Length: 320
Image (cartoon, rainbow, N blue to C red; front, side):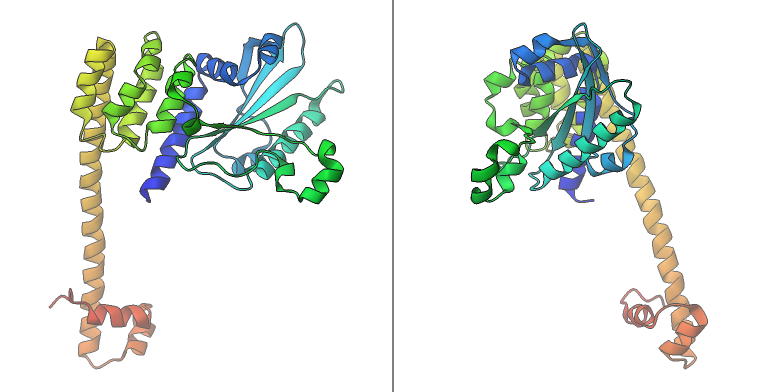
């Protein structure tokens, strides 16, 4: 698997798991919403919408989360669609709009009154490249059209470009600080460097051992040379955090090393099996060729294609 694809998959998984923790999600949202919106919402009612009946649209935004919060003293909902992007994507606004429409259609089928939830869309972007695409549909329209209909075209999406936000600002984001900094620095830097960047935020997790486990596990999987530098990371945790954090890092590092050894053994076994099959084919081909049959005849007898027969016959690994 391409290393960048693997890093993206790890980041998507981390984004989904860590933000599904209610205190982390609340801090994250509060950092990017206006005071008037925050004061109108009852964050104690926050919930993650896992089974929302819009599976086909969800597949197009697999790296997304839908969160619901009720307004204070009311039954009406505000929903937040949070999409994580590892790379810039030109048409993400259209994908989000399709998903929002699917959500609203789903709500319309089960409403007891005429009020639909307000859906606020956020793109959380951690790529180093600058995001140059518009955050709203009107950004893709011609200037002439906008002059006539600028007020009628909306659908704004809030972009959070982590590499364009100063670390001092991120450090003020409560439990969300670590999430944002891990996504910002994780794949590009060594593990002890990332831990140092996240030190202020990590210290806020002293009463969240499960979340610390998730964070450290993620860093050991995505940071540059993390497995080789695991011992340095362990020492860093003991020195800069607390004893149980160091113990957690030791446990995770040992598990990853054991998994790596087992994976290496399994891959070796698999390679041996595949090589054995190839050698068996070579013996069959050599035997039939030695009896004067051509490639077309061998194809008819064995089902092996003429191209593969010729490749096997010419291979320098042909068994004698």
